[in-house]
Structures are given as structure tokens and as C-alpha cells.
Image 1 (cartoon, rainbow, N blue to C red):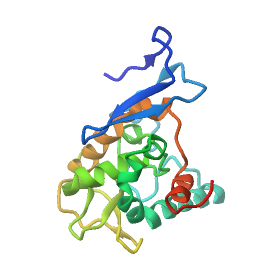
Image 2 (cartoon, helix red, strand yellow; image 1 turned 120 degrees about the horizontal axis):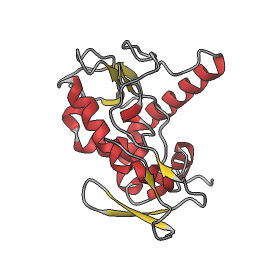
Image 3 (spheres, rainbow, N blue to C red; image 1 turned 180 degrees about the vertical axis):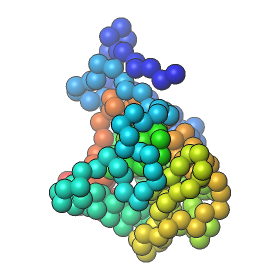
Image 4 (spheres, rainbow, N blue to C red; image 1 turned 135 degrees about the vertical axis):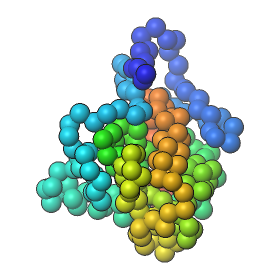
Length: 214
């Protein structure tokens, strides 16, 4: 069972180390203001009734024009730069603030909602693409970037991005459960660091990688 973690009795430190999938250790700088507890992630039944079906748009989003514009911006920012970011994976893996940069994509499961997918980061996506290729790269070699479907039937509407930045339906080569479970496995490795440590925005990461001043 997932439980919150309290820091009231832990020694004070200004750093936290995370271990990447390949075994390297990355030292992260803690935020000046720390949360009192760490919110858990993992599979939890949705009690809001918002995730009773599989759809192409996350059900938690408002239908307002502003919310839709924000959703579209986040999707395009990530997909149009996905392959460029993958090409720069080694540099990102050497900087915790890049690794922990939030990727504002709302993945979800019918009946479960977004609970196992909360707060994905750039490093999470990169590690997933590189280490779980059977699930994270489809039959046409495109990167899976959006995960949505039913954990019961396996029906899904996952989306991929090709090297030209074009969003395409997944050409599935493995079970849907392999896709979402592998992503959640990576995403949940860094739950504490995502809530406690400093991170760049995705826009800032792109500026740095392209040699632009912040």
C-alpha cells in the first residue's frame, strides 16, 4: 500500500541522490521550501467517475478554450522536440534539473485515472524510450508519448511521434499492459525527487541544449 512519507525526523541535507536505471548516481539539489510529506503514486481506483471510458483527451481537463490551448501547447512542445531530446539524452542524464524537468502530458487509465502517471519528467520518458523499447517504441519505430486505455480490455488510443514530429496512432507490437506498466515502473522510481528537488522547465531545457541564454 502506498503511504505518505514524513521528513520531520530526518536529518537536514541540501541534496538528494537518485540512481538511474543504468546504475549511475545523480545528485539533486533540494528546493528551498520542502513538502511536509511525499504524496504517493501507484495504482488507485478513481473515485471521481471521470475515467470510466477510454478517450483521446484526458478527462480531468476543463473544456475551456484556455485549458485546451494549454493542453495543445504542452503536447506540441513535447512531440515537436521529442527526437531532439532523445538525441541529447546523455547530456540530460548528467544534469538532475534537466532530468527532473516536468513533462506536462496527462496519461491515464480507465477506472484508475492518472494516479500511476503523475508528474512524468523528461528523464522518465528518455529512460523509458531507451530501456523499454518493445513497449515504448512502436512497430514503425515511433516513440510512444501519450498513454490512454483500459487496463481490463487492453483497448487503447496511445499516440506516437515520428522523427518529423508528426503525431500518429500507435502501431502496437506488444500488450497494452506492457506499455503502461513499464512507463509507471520508471515514473515511480523518482517520486520523492520530483516533489523535493529543483528542476528546469521543459522550455528551459530546450534553451540550454540549443545554446540559448535563460
